[in-house]
Image (spheres, rainbow, N blue to C red):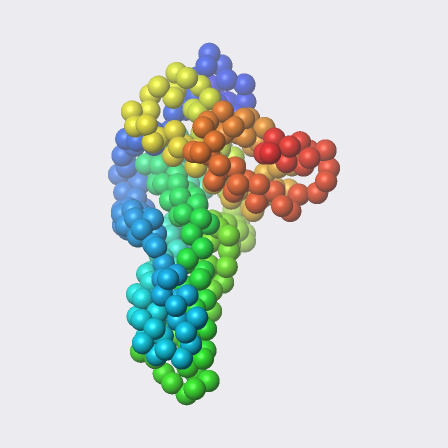
Length: 324
């Protein structure tokens, strides 16, 4: 156990030993079942959400024609009919983010609760650690797709302009019953974020820490830093990489590593990029840089975006230079 805790604490590895988080095959124990079932129901929906977002083409052509021909009522109706089902889809994505937030909270409670330390939780409750990883994987996948699809913002902006215009003309559109003004305002704030799902999880983690006054913040941040460390070591060690039976597990592991880094940065008082951080940022960036650029560019961009708050001290400059 002493050797395992050294590994989990990212201390010097003895005899090359490391806890191997089984992201492919971990199954819940009886103690994990209640939380696992709750989170599993949310994760099952996540696959469909990603598929819908990936096939989201937008109503750009219809909107352009309507804007260019403002007096053509037929083109206005055509654009509106094209946008409404897309906005309904965007509403489902937003509502899913709220369910994802609740799932994350349940996992944080399970992985940081006494009497076990966070390091012991990751060892004992691998199925929940896997679900935590799956949430992060989904989150970064969603945000990468959103960032590269300007149609989402364009469609929603057109929808809101049309709603506002019709209100001025004292017209009530049926679509408002599904996405009313209050919902539209919340969705607008959500989609205005460059990485909306990650922002949701960051806020949820910060809220979890602030609401649990009796739980030391280190219990949460140590859980995040430990997972980042384990992912990094599994990625950079050939004997552990070869235990992955699925070729997608490498990318999964990288997304999880980046996700916990960003969550740690939002929650920890000094952030993930400070000299005193428990996360080896240089090592993590090195692992990403060693992969094909087309598979990790989105992850590097997420880290670059996160570092925008850094000062111009020597450590910050080194991190920024590594991310170039």
